[in-house]
Image (tube, rainbow, N blue to C red; front, side, top):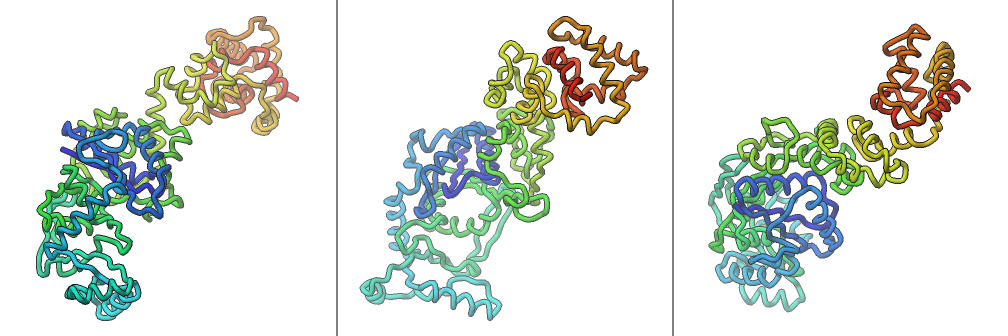
Length: 469
């Protein structure tokens, strides 16, 4: 099997594109096949090299690696469509020689009038064939006037296009409602419909998973490939991703680019596990490696209903991925934020304390600040404590002054808390909640005994003194 991902470098890679790439990659891995990357940059006005480079960085960050494509030469290059114009020109010429394509001089205004007439007659909008029968002399005359035509594919009349879709099953389209379509723009560049199909055939792609918004393109591409006696891929059209509100996913309802997720501190394992289940069913609900995701990938598990983006599910997989990190990987993940605060000798103890309580490096930084810096939160803490907690804080502060060592061990801290509880005749939440607030400024977080091994006893006493003040 040979699958592909063929993005246009006109923007940053979003979740929909990333999922398409991932599904094609998993399909290739599942069948010990080849995954190909092709950059479809024929839109010179909008395509940018820097965006293509960023896209490749995003793919590698996600753990998606191509065996053919840019940076990895293969037998079917070049893999940038902007470098393949001569190939497309050859196939344009073949189609014209076969009588399967013809020049069209209709202007945008002409086409607009055609559409309005069809709409008024309750007919589907399609090209009416105005230029189908132009003679050689008529074409030459129009060119002499400086008119640059598009090139249209001549769709067979009263025919039916059938194909089996990996996701949607057998599909059938009547050519009568398709209409002749543009395969070369007036400026000579190739349309998406044309170059996408030609390149799939020439590069040996036989599996093409893509969004269901391309479903109507498929019969057109199959007709072209059939006219040229070229092989066609087995297509699969996956459901689109909607926001939680049921509208197409956008920045307004939760869409983020892969670059955004990486900058926020999401782990690639989390994003992979989330995207692989967005429109695809896995029986195994554990965090899976890429190899495991591939081995359990199945075309029959691709859903036909729209997939809905769920921020909580993405966060769930982030939590699972963070918990799976070993100490070195966890530190590498949050090091940029924490390295200047966490003493090297206390690195492992710090990680042990917070790993189960953070989702992002920014949260690790917040805990590092709490543990290793003088804290500014005393007024906020005092506002959360009741007046009767003054006696509690005074008792805790007095007990702390009796300790001569620099820091507690976990057992020593537990003994301190037990002594405090006995003095005040309290236990449970009433005992631990004020202590946590005074020590960390937070109502929830890591185990207090673990925290106490990181914060010097003098600093703990200082925090109680500030709360008392």
